[in-house]
Length: 90
Image (cartoon, rainbow, N blue to C red; front, side, top):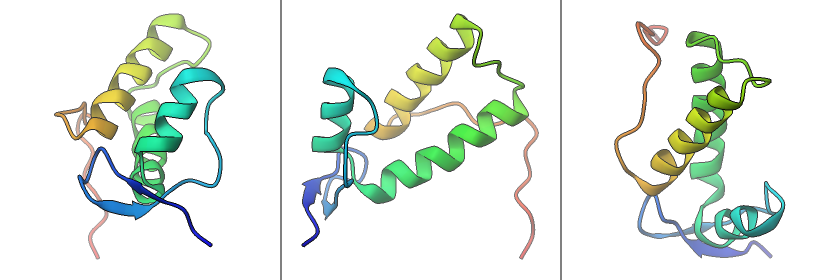
């Protein structure tokens, strides 16, 4: 049976994640308050940010930037977009 959470991003009840994506309190917060849909969307956006902004995950400042953007994205706040990115036309 699928677990349901009240998604922080979409402000409605949606299917939740199967497990916490991070260890500790941050992971538990995401597990309890973020839907699978919102998390999957964040994963795609995170990859876009890393690639388009050429972020280096070995760099502490780049990791902090990505963490802050994740918090904004999952909270439904304004978040960073990839500069100059144009989605493929259908």
